[in-house]
Length: 128
Image (cartoon, rainbow, N blue to C red; front, side, top):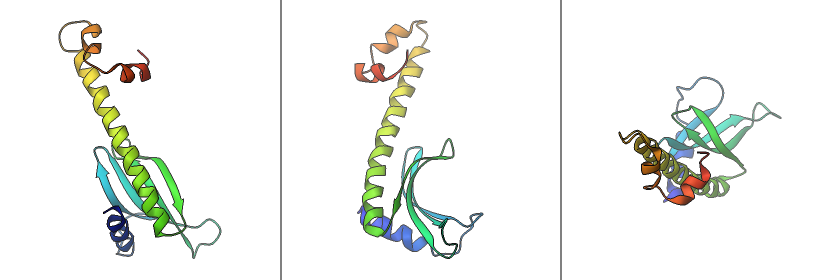
């Protein structure tokens, strides 16, 4: 399934682009506020050559979170799989943090009541 998405995204890179600049991208998957993209960017060494990248992009912040340079589509498929897992983890963490924030303002006036509803491993990762 991921291989099909990467291959379709690769084919979409060759369609006329509406993007500014020399780089082009095509979405592979969208997971919450994150998008896994296939990018084609001009090579630093040779303007005629292009580099193939898979990027995890935060749509809310409008910036790349992580990326892998790929020599061929098999590498892009593996990279897309890894970045989709990372996007799911980041999306879950964002959701759990939102629950914590909502709970802290639920009218009790005490954050302790909200902490009781959240998993302890999540709290260990937050600087409260």
